[in-house]
Image (cartoon, rainbow, N blue to C red; front, side, top):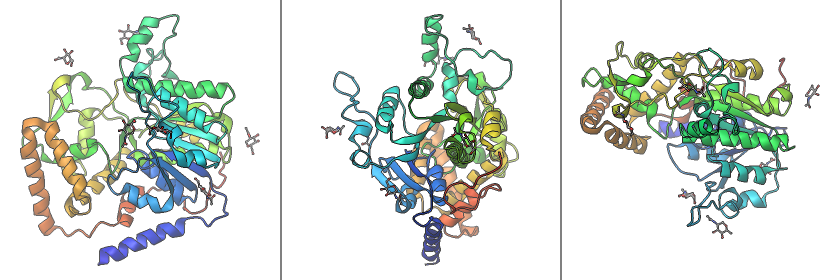
Length: 442
Ligand SMILES: *[C@@H]1O[C@H](CO)[C@@H](O)[C@H](O)[C@H]1NC(C)=O
Ligand SMILES: *[C@@H]1O[C@H](CO)[C@@H](O)[C@H](O)[C@H]1NC(C)=O
Ligand SMILES: *[C@@H]1O[C@H](CO)[C@@H](O)[C@H](O)[C@H]1NC(C)=O
Ligand SMILES: *[C@@H]1O[C@H](CO)[C@@H](O)[C@H](O)[C@H]1NC(C)=O
Ligand SMILES: *[C@@H]1O[C@H](CO)[C@@H](O)[C@H](O)[C@H]1NC(C)=O
Ligand SMILES: *[C@@H]1O[C@H](CO)[C@@H](O)[C@H](O)[C@H]1NC(C)=O
């Protein structure tokens, strides 16, 4: 009963945060705005009083879609391009062009935030569809683009935005080709970035690229952080040390916290629209986004272990092919975030604080056990599949642990407001509800 009452208060408070009609907010379209990487961005835009439209398939994982649906215009569309029998891509008859809500509306968007374009063909289609319909395009890319770039020409231990450069087609076609093969994802993302630049140079819409590192946060649709969190807790009891990939023992890892992405998107838009300042400093530019700390795998496990109450995390070095290593998901090493800090005046959450928030989120989910039962069972299934013969005893141990703790530790029912407190509490977050950004001194 109490849970229900609290829940409705949370909904109400979000309602009150919505700017009344007429206050000048932005009209923003978020592609893929109900997914793991994008949902905080959608939520922040709504809280800040903007008119948010989301194009997604409306898949219901976690409670993300249900939480956002009342506050956004949702256009249910599958923007993935279909292929004909011969393998050719159907750019004229599938994907965004088949999104009738989009084609029948004549809304002009101040910004399109794109979390969902995966391939060059999808980007080409998006560019056609949004030509003359958008003032600023924000493309969410990743550090994988550096995996297909030529060798860096500096000796810094971090990757700068300018390092995402391919060898020339004429000078070293073979190098170029070989590099493309190092990361299909990186190759696709870089092709998308290149296409955006090409249309911009030809007089098209301005854009900003945000390159993410290894993404972590609550409500993953993979189970990267979640699995590590539980593994760290189980490793000693089950003598199941965490794997360290022998080929990556000393590689440093850049991690990007999902609420930090939201902050960077908002700052990019306010600058890109020249509301805060300096559109010329962000148009056509890329910005790396990640926490400043860059742990190795072992250090990351210790970071995760600390809030989980594990002072010591056992590890074992395992060859690449046989290891279960969830971070890093790139080859090129960590990224520098200086440019985003200087130009966007963006500052990432401290890694320790961010990991604590995520740890607390998953702990509450597991202890409470009911609200996200489907998601928990999904995680157990994936965990079993990933850990092979150790899977069943790992799952059994974990279930028993939380069942036992549930008897003694009293946890209130989870409600939306608690989740916000856990995750969104940021010292620098603005008071929401104003609609648009107040000008700030740059
Ligand atoms: C918000 O955007 C939707 C379309 O995305 C549009 O139909 C609606 O009129 C907009 N609302 C306001 C208040 O501008
Ligand atoms: C979306 O469209 C693609 C291409 O047609 C298809 O492969 C995929 O199954 C669709 N997804 C959903 C959820 O409908
Ligand atoms: C897209 O729309 C066209 C025309 O309405 C239709 O013929 C086609 O089957 C649709 N394609 C997909 C993949 O739904
Ligand atoms: C780039 O560096 C790798 C080793 O780090 C080397 O094997 C390769 O030849 C270099 N490529 C070029 C084009 O210099
Ligand atoms: C951005 O705004 C500043 C100050 O209002 C103005 O001086 C500048 O010309 C604007 N830049 C563009 C590209 O509109
Ligand atoms: C790892 O797997 C790849 C292909 O899956 C294979 O080419 C390579 O030899 C394997 N390496 C080791 C050390 O087993």
